[in-house]
Length: 233
Image (tube, rainbow, N blue to C red):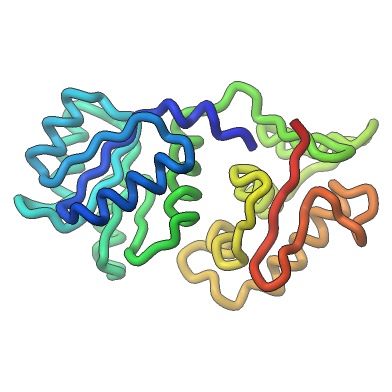
């Protein structure tokens, strides 16, 4: 799926660790994001948000003059932009607190670059819809807005899990998406033990999108790593 329409969105990063700010900004810039604003405190984050009017904020929970939760509450007084929390803590209480305040997602450090990008794209896509949610494969087209596969003169419906799986792969067209990332997209924060279920969903999707499911050309297995989706321009 083409993410280029999201790359013009302005992102606000707030973290008091310079190396982490640099790393996160680098990951996002390498992916194609053009406008990134950084701040190192609650006070500076509020000032930058008012000045720059970003489209998404990625906030650290622990900040020198407060925390990400209080920062989000201040931001909510003048903007409804989506918010992702980024923190070293992996405590359920913190996660529930952030989500309870209306955060859109929550990422625990350490994290893989791919996880940061997947979650960032997912939140942006939910908040800023693309005009044409169609993905063209070899021999068929996915219409995500209708959860359908158009294959010749057939219209084949997608289940909710199949839709989520394909959408996650399509956001990373041509790139490997790991089994762990796919399982988390489908089953949430505790994705372990779902690999067999994931394989079953992949088999059913191949029956819907591939001319020969035993010799897939669109949904490819990368042995020992995960899967990737090859689309046609």
